[in-house]
Image (cartoon, rainbow, N blue to C red; front, side):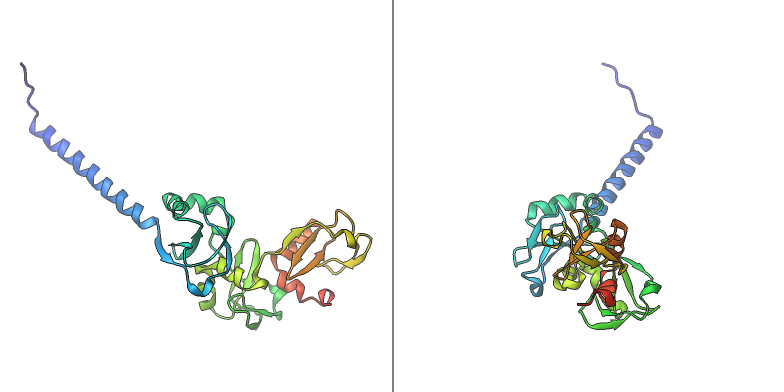
Length: 236
């Protein structure tokens, strides 16, 4: 038999490789743990509220058995432990897939809204919008707040605050009511007179139906619904 001796230099090289691989393994292990989030109990005050599952978008009613995960300071809700586990395997995948999983963004209040009498999206208290009003943009619409502390609370659990206060909900696109065909009304964002027909853009918001002269006018309303509801031409 023939044996080939390994030089001291080669031995040191293999030791270095093993050390590097070990360090990479430990780093990946801890980084994986750090990004999966922390399992928490759903707040009892929120039992009965309906939110979307962060795994597949299904509607779920929060109760004591609802799976809840805090990831990067934001709460996410799930139908069962399996769905939560799949989310934990790759949180960013599901955040990118579902817009409602993304974080609300801080923006400046709209200049056109300065002086608007509306309600805080945190607790419904009356506020007047100004240049300094804390503002968030989430799911293609604007939310106003009285204080920065309210902003942080909303960012922590946005789906809860949307479920809790009807004014926070996203205006829902609907088909025009057949009973309204041929009726004259005003565009919900411009105030211009329009005639309702089968192709008139329409939204349901706060239990009311709003009609629009174009898709653009409808999108303008969707972005800032509380501002347009307060317009004199939308008051009953």
